[in-house]
Image 1 (tube, rainbow, N blue to C red):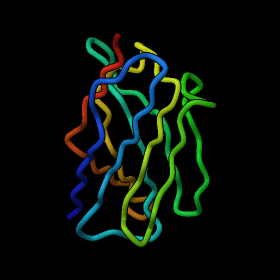
Image 2 (cartoon, rainbow, N blue to C red; image 1 turned 45 degrees about the horizontal axis):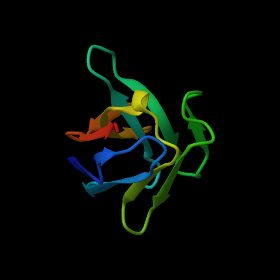
Image 3 (cartoon, rainbow, N blue to C red; image 1 turned 45 degrees about the vertical axis):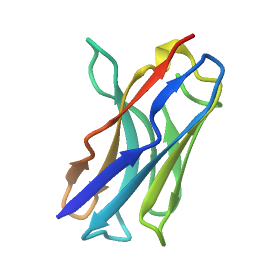
Length: 117
């Protein structure tokens, strides 16, 4: 089993920054891909950014140039550095682990990010 625990959410003013962390525990494979998704009220969950086991990354167009995903394999932790935040970034952010070997998804419980003045 895999457990994912997010932290770092909160209230920030437009233009501000936040850094989300996701600590993974349990059975972690070196081949696992990690990612961040978000869900705003009344909207579907969408991909924000993901990073493969080889540190290849991709981002949603809406966050390119503002968000950076990274991972520390020694700590089984993935980060999302969010800069130049906008009100439309307000959402619950979910950590995701994708087990390539078995095509399985694991999810954290989410952390709320609110961008407002």
